[in-house]
Length: 453
Image (cartoon, rainbow, N blue to C red; front, side, top):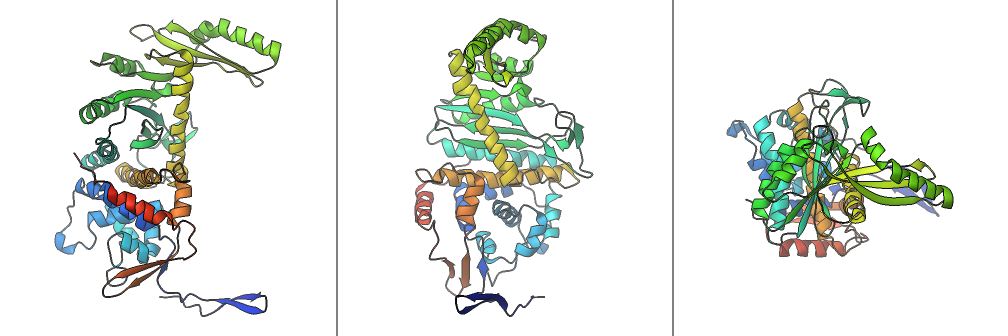
C-alpha cells in the first residue's frame, strides 16, 4: 500500500512558508547507474557471467532470466545496496529497471529478495569455478590489443568475519575470530593501476599460501598464451614465502621473477644482527632514523638451496624494525625493496575498497557455495568501477576510490519519464559532474567491444 503524506512543514524561509511532499513523480537517487550499465555492455561482463551459469528452471515459468538477476544484483551492489533484502524496496526503482534493460513503467518490476536468494543458493561448484574466471578473462581481453610490458601479480589474503552457522567457517588464531580466509589476486600494469584477477573464498582454517602455487600455474599459463611478450613478476607477503612457490617460479622454462616477504626467525635475526647493531649505533649517534639495505644467502629448513635475501635494517624512535624479503631478481637491494616490494601496499587499498566500499565480506548465507557466488557478484561490481576509473584518465577522478566514484558519479537524482516513443532521463541542471558524461560516453563508444576468448 502506498503511504500518502500530503504535506511536510519545514517552517519558514525568510517570509515564505517552506513545505514539501512526495508527489515529484518517478525520481531515482542513482541516475549514474546508467554509466555503469554502459560500462557493463562494453565489457560484456554480466552477459559473460550469465553464459557460464546453468539455468535448470522451466522456461515457461521464468520471469527473470539469469542475466536479469545478475544485472540487478551487481548494479545494486555498485550503488551501495549490498543486501538481498534491499531488492524488495528497489525492484520498482525506475533507473535500476532501465539500467537492467526494462522500461520504467510498462515493464514488470525486477526480482524480489526471495527470488534472488533462491538464485544465490542454486549455483553449484562447477559453475562457480567458471564464474571465478570472469575477472581474469576481462583483464586479458582488455589488454590483448596493447599488451603491457610488465604485469606484477600481487597475492594477499584478508579476513572475512562470520557470524552464525556458515559452512566452513573456523576460528583463525591470527585474526582472533571465526572467519573465512579469501585469497585475493590483483595485477599491476605499466601505469601503476591495479585490476582484480581473482577473489576466492576459502575456509577459515586455511593457511595464507595454501593452493597459491596451483593458482599461479593456471594464471601464468593463460597469461603466457594471451600475452606472450609480457613479463610477469610475482609479489606477495610472508604468507606466500613457501618452498612450493619458489620451486614453481624457478622451475619454469623461463623462470618467473618473484619478491616475497620472509617472516623473522632466530636464524635470520642472527644473520641480520651485525647490520642492525651498526644501524642502532648510527641512530644513537645522530638521533635521526636510519634505513639501510643489505643482503646475504640463506636457506631455511625444507628449501632445496640457498636464495637471495634482502634485509631492510631500519631503526627509528620506535625502535629497530628489521624486514626481510626473498627474491630471484638481479636488481639493486634498494630498487628491489623500495621500488618493487614496498609498493605492494597499494594492493591493500584495493582490498579496502572491496571490503569497505563494496562490502564484499557480506557472506551471511549458510551454504559456502552461495557465499562464494556473493563474493563473485561483489567482485563484478568492482570490475565495473575499475573500468570506469580507467575511462576517467586525465580527470580528477582517475585515481578516485570506489566510494568517491559512487558519491560523485552514481548518486545523482534523475526524473524518469516514459512515453510511447522514448524514455527520457532528466538530470539536475546544476549537476556538478555533467561535463564528464559526454566524455565518458564518447570514450566508451570509441573503444572496440572486448573480444572474449
